[in-house]
Length: 423
Ligand code: ASP
Ligand code: MG
Image 1 (cartoon, protein in one colour):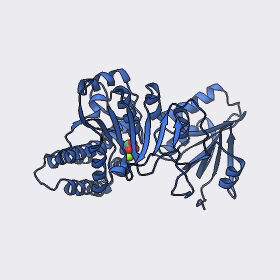
Image 2 (image 1 turned 135 degrees about the horizontal axis):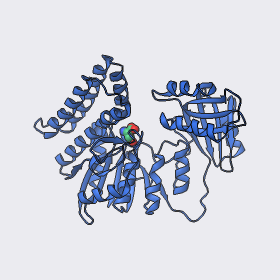
Image 3 (image 1 turned 30 degrees about the vertical axis):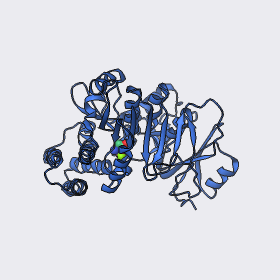
Image 4 (image 1 turned 60 degrees about the horizontal axis):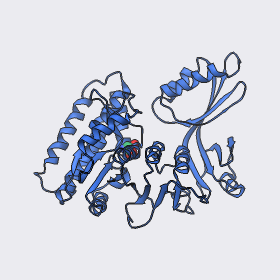
């Protein structure tokens, strides 16, 4: 069995979905295709959710645009008006419309998963119908039926055993065929929809590969593979041919946006190789991630996280930051699902660099103010350099105001002001 994963950028238009169909048609007849929402649909759905909670009329404008975006793709791929996908898509749209006309429940995370999962449900319905229409016969499967999770909405935890037995019911060992399923979404025992965290489709694909003992997983991207830096800012970025699982985990943890951090473990556990390849040039070799025994020299790799915030906490009573304070601080990060990227602490001050995103940053800050004096800086970037050299550090930090620096043997991180164009 092979598992192919196509992210939002590789399914953002009818023409990219035609590229997908070329790739799928030459993959043989033992294939699971895991697909994300079209283009930036998940961002749009997040926006839609926020406007719904504000009871803003703008939600209907956003919704109409989203509907049109999908309908335009359907019409281009499946011009025959009688295709059942038109009705199926209309059914999905009807469900959302009904929601938008109702009052959202108090459980934001629950509503999030329910609404945002629409992106993947729609994209896979459309792609599956298109592939069938060009005689790439396939079966659409609902990830909510096989990817069993708990009910930690927006960041659900996967039950691997149950998922495995559900998936095996749908795809028994030795069965041939092509199956199309959603990334990012799963379902609880009682049938609630869940999601695995933003950009979680890679993780879904890795889980499917693990559960089906796949020969390999290929993640199809709009870049030639994993690069030493983001080519849109650093034209000198080079492709990395080969990485160990370990290095790939580290890179994704530090924010290399090429693969989701949770992707590697399910693959590593079963020694399944991961290829990151370009869907535009599928014959090129891409990057291979696998178990490497021998030492492979790695070039310095630059990872930049934008829209960062640095928060410094000092206990109001000037007591030391000890374990009780630390546990309270981390409980708050967990409660608001904040991504912490760097931590530094001294006797009476605790500094965190985190993503300044999502609707809950202000609430987090105000809750912290109960116990701490809180100072913060916004508009920062976090620069991480793996396998650094002094020359590379100088190149990327010259002229920048460094607020925090942290260095280990392999990695150096700098929180700096976000005012650098990369030239
Ligand atoms: N569509 C989801 C997102 O954009 C999941 C994914 O693309 O991996 O976060
Ligand atoms: Mg996406």
